[in-house]
Length: 221
Ligand SMILES: *[C@@H]1O[C@H](CO)[C@@H](O)[C@H](O)[C@H]1NC(C)=O
Ligand SMILES: *[C@@H]1O[C@H](CO)[C@@H](O)[C@H](O)[C@H]1NC(C)=O
Ligand SMILES: *[C@@H]1O[C@H](CO)[C@@H](O)[C@H](O)[C@H]1NC(C)=O
Image (cartoon, rainbow, N blue to C red):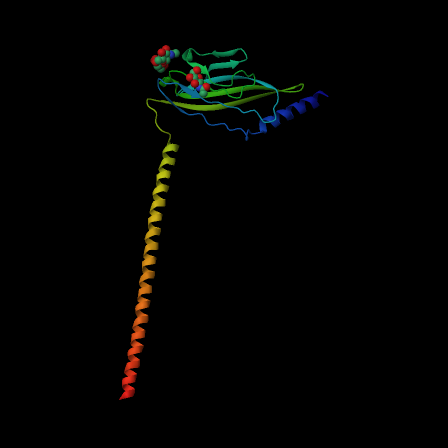
């Protein structure tokens, strides 16, 4: 009996883990903070649509650039937030889910960013799901790579998309111009052709007339 329960529980857990949150948009966190300013470090783990009672606690870890070990900097549970590291004392605010035990948004807000805050951040959701009498523990973790800069620079993606916008606008205009010139020349050519044809017709008419005249003259001779 017990193995069957275990099997079922692990099956449910596997189901949860494999449901790859497709329906829930999880935007990537920004990765560039400006020194002296605040920075919202995003971390989302969407619950699956089939709602299951659950509860979650959150832990944040930080590894400064050039170091090898992560340090525990922040914990959020039903009792509220705790800043675990001296380095971040009074500098982290909770920006995540409020008034909820089953946290989906574990974002934190870093105040007065310093260059020393550059590095890798990892947030862990320790989620417990209750399927009736079964409990399923799920750990979801996300990584945010933060670089601290002196002044805000624009992301290359936005620069690239802007350049593409200009290129396409200019391209369209050039194409339109070419099309206009082509059309104009075509119309002009058609007009010339019509004129030429008309002139030809006239000339032929005159020629045949004069031929007739000549013929008349010839006949007359
Ligand atoms: C995050 O927290 C900071 C500081 O408490 C606050 O200024 C900011 O408006 C919050 N942002 C969001 C999106 O909740
Ligand atoms: C953050 O900076 C503001 C203004 O520069 C200052 O008043 C505040 O005390 C600083 N907070 C911390 C935790 O250093
Ligand atoms: C950054 O770290 C260095 C070395 O650990 C330290 O000397 C310095 O005071 C730190 N700077 C800030 C702004 O915390």
